[in-house]
Picture (spheres, rainbow, N blue to C red):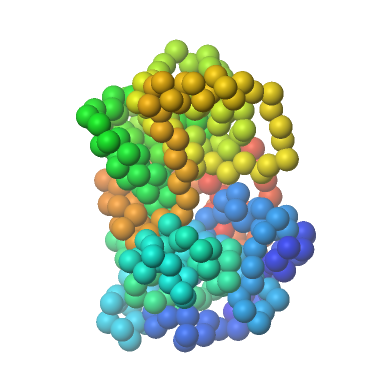
Length: 348
């Protein structure tokens, strides 16, 4: 079968292998026909050689962690042939740590977790894959075109869960939120914010393309100015760009007792002239909380599935700006500022 692979830590090693081995039964009892994988910045960083880890004893890593497939067989009786399914990306570490022991593997404390298509487990950019029942998330027929959005939605579902947990340290009655970045994570964060009844503002530099219309279709307000120029003191700010300047400005932007949730990843290596003392004063005097959020556990995947089921699927479909056949795989992984979500069609 065909698979898209890289040699981890070797830039430019992306290739399409025509005779990749069938998935081993040890990967899981549920055999799945791959339909599509979503492409994100993590994939591009792995292709650039920044990180990535092949499974033990292998030199190549099948990439792709935003999965969508159709069940071919399930002797475990968990699913039925023809069911749509997505696979949870992270698996708990074998020790396990305190969090992995209770299935909170997104909060792993010792770093021994594994992740499909990223760290020690084969990804889903191959024509067939297997999954264990505990890591299989069933999807209804309505998800046939957008099911690969489940993984990024699980990321923001976790973020909102943790925001709300922190919020309840005092009386919690948030009214407004600012989302920085209108990529897939930012737009999905905005979607979940509107489902919570919040007044939503989204900031992005793009003045053309689909982003402004997608934000307005949610009933949210689109901004193109800097964080400091937005005339707003939000109760919650979800930072989705990873840009160091935006991150720092966001910490100063929220109102008293506000919460800043960082979901974007900075690349590092960039220094900024910034008044750290003023930031410290603001955080302390206004009881501001800054949290980081990454990955998700099964509970968040299920929350994500429920959120997407409530969403307008034509809006979700519009997030996918490019659907690229597997035969043209290199195009799918090229960085393009005009895209929102690129999907690799594994059936073409």
